[in-house]
Length: 251
Ligand SMILES: Nc1ncnc2c1ncn2[C@@H]1O[C@H](COP(=O)(O)OP(=O)(O)O)[C@@H](O)[C@H]1O
Ligand SMILES: [Mg+2]
Image (cartoon, rainbow, N blue to C red; front, side):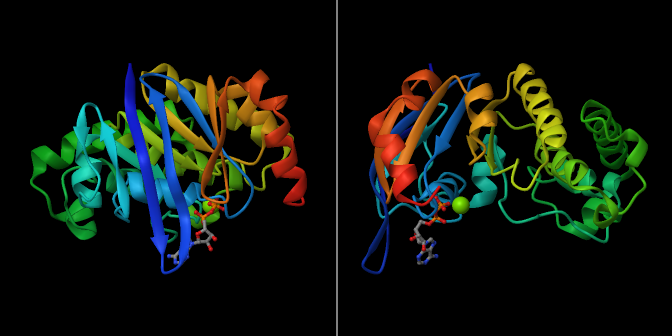
C-alpha cells in the first residue's frame, strides 16, 4: 500500500521548472530512495511534501489524504518529519534538550515552552520519551553534551532522534550520509535500518550509492526536475539513462 503518493507535481520558480510533472509513490514500511544529480529537484520535492512550498500543480497524498498546500506544522502533525540537508540542530542546546524540542514538534509549542514552560505532567512525559529516543539512537552517554560538540556521526544521529521524537509515520532524510567516512556510513546505515524496522517509512535523498543501494527497496531517479527512472536497486544500477545522467553531471 502506498503511504505517500506524488501525482504530477510541478514546482516553478519564475521561468524555471524545478519539478516538472513528477509522480512516484513510497510504500508503507519501505525505505524509498530519491536520487539524481545536483539540481535535479530532490530537496524541492521534500519541501513540497513537508509544506515549506506548495506545488505549482499536482497533488500529494499521504495516508489517503491530500496534503499539498497544508502548513508545515499541519503536515508534521499528520506524521511527516524531515531532516534537513543543512544542519538543523540547536547548536547551543544539549543533546537531551534538542530531542525535547523534537518531542513537542507535533504539539506546536514554542522553543521556550518546550524546554521550560509546560505543565509538569506533559513535561515529565516528554522527558521520559526523549530519554527513550536517545537510548534507541545510542546517544544516552552524550545527552548532556552541547550539540555543537558532537562528532559528525552523532550530529546526524541526533538529527534523526529529533525527527523520531515527534513519532512520525514518514521521515524524509536529505543527504544524511554527506561527508561521512566509511565507518560513520556503516553506523548510519545500521541506524537507518533500525528506525525503519520500528515501522517508520523513510524517503532517502542521498548521493552515497553504497548507502542507497544497500538500504532502499525501491528507487526514484530525478534529472533536471523530471522523472528519469524508477525501479529496484539492480534495475537502477544498470539503467543507461541513469548512468548517462550521472556521468553527464560530472559525478
Ligand atoms: N527557492 C528557489 N528559488 C529559485 N530556484 C530554486 C529554489 N529552490 C531551488 N531552486 C532551483 O531548483 C532546482 C532544483 O534544486 P534542488 O531541489 O535544491 O535540487 P537537488 O536537491 O536535487 O540538488 C535548481 O536548479 C535550484 O537552483
Ligand atoms: Mg538538495
